[in-house]
Image 1 (cartoon, protein in one colour):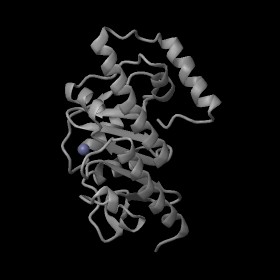
Image 2: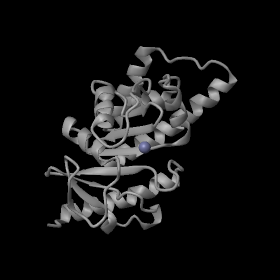
Image 3: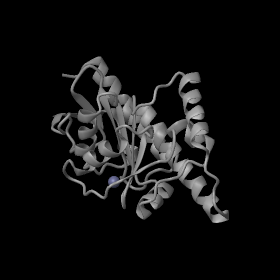
Length: 223
Ligand SMILES: [Zn+2]
């Protein structure tokens, strides 16, 4: 059933996993990326428990939007149900990324949203980066928590409490960018906290920054 589109999505998702290691967002086999296959009710996702250096296009797994394997020899990521739930609930989302990146997950462990104190954060996330509920892997609970937190929110990243980061984007590349930016923001705001109390950006200036960034750069918010 492999089509040129499906082949391209497999290659893109495989290649994007290199960005997770390049930016030090993952350890061992943790973390995963998926992409919706345009024009279908399918997604391509990382296989479970496979080393990052072995993540070729052929190793990727194709699932339907309920997480059932359609094509691929390996078992899909243990987070497949969460990714699938997001695609079902948020038709505008074309890519989902999950990491346990260190600084962002440190905020998640405390259940504290990252306050908007950096212009780059206002640009990318349009405000604070919110916290989602503690949910255990395996069924729809994580997906429900992601969707409930990000629906109607400008942020494309959610800190799932005691767990890690999920990001969404119009495509997988945008979701990876959000994961990279989320970790950078988490790190800088954490360091700022060590020096004193970071200064909040007034809401109207956050709005202006967000609007400019998503207009001038020709991007639309994914949420
Ligand atoms: Zn996880």
